[in-house]
Length: 235
Length: 272
Image (cartoon, rainbow over all chains, first blue to last red; front, side, top):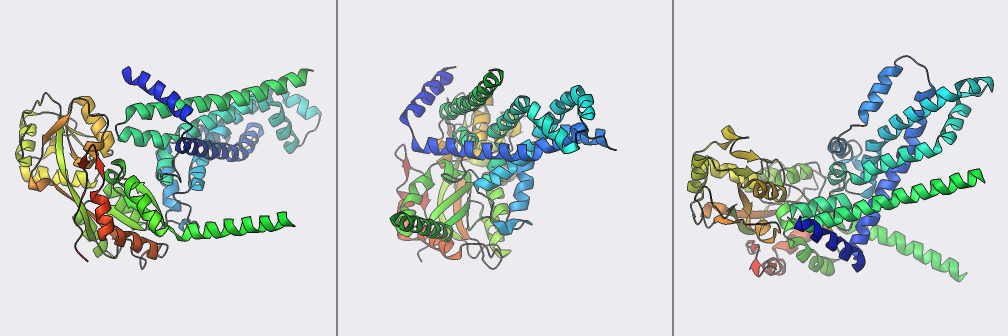
């Protein structure tokens, strides 16, 4: 218990001190995970929408696979990306291992299935409501997808946040493909793992508290965007 | 006009800087003890100020570091498992192995000392005593340099601890720090390198129980990765770094690193 209070006061002191190293780590965490979330949405949302409105053979098998991929273990994703980006791997010539780009790739693979599977469910429910209307308007498939994505945009924001939450909190993938290199690929979670392994549990916990606050901040920002937009819609 | 000129200069500087940075940075695949103890934080700024070479350290267990270097994912290997290092060079992955520095391993245990080994300096005898009494022992179990050493010491002591794995013998399968955290949490004896132990912050009531046996000697070596095998390595910068570490200046810098007034690593590179 004592170390929890110690960690809290350490977290406050760290933030107030405006430590340059801490700021660098926080910014890299945000840059990597927000970029991965954006790319995962670009990939995941269209896939989710197409599967939501599509009727094709093997659809239930696709659903099962999509849902199962939500449980991809980060360390397995990290290993797969490592094996591809390693100098001895098929994409080694790109020289991407131990860079933030490698971390973005790993997190994108990790959360794209989450975005696809959750958006599929949201859009399928919405589609069930509107299907007849869409048919009477003779919408093309593309128009249907566009209308659904627009109409469900607030629910899909939550889907995006679920993806971001998973990305910013995972350590297994980024520590393998990023290497936790100081001033290059060190993010919040790998810094926490490092301080834990040094036995500095209070500092590790303090970093964890700061990470939580950052996640809160991102969620609050999205929520305020959503509320502003909703208010304007009713004016 | 001035603006344009400035932009062009900025771009030129940026591109120049990027190229320079690319040429002058290396990746060191390293054991964790040298990183966790803060040695690199002490050495690298000195080296970088002198040579302009940026050194990026990937700190993993010795086994994984060697594997990563064999995959050409590093320019220099700095680990502590001599037999594996010599094999690495013999297999053509490294150009040359040089002794760099040493410290020693210790066995740490709870103040209550359930196995009664505190103060012993015969490590094989102490391990046999721990096994006989069935006192808990937490092992790295991760093919790291420390784990390999521990297994060799068990073999010398005539005990096969793997038979008791999950019983009194607990293999954490993780790094030195994580194993110390786990071992201290369950009241188990742990073998660790002295550098990690001195700088470890979560000691609780743990003390060094066994130390001073010649067999607990811990030698670190440095090996540049072979460009003939891995064309992507930054040969010149890697060689510069390896040469600097074993030079008088590098060796003095290693000797000068202290935590709590204790020297953590003792340089012993051969005179060149």
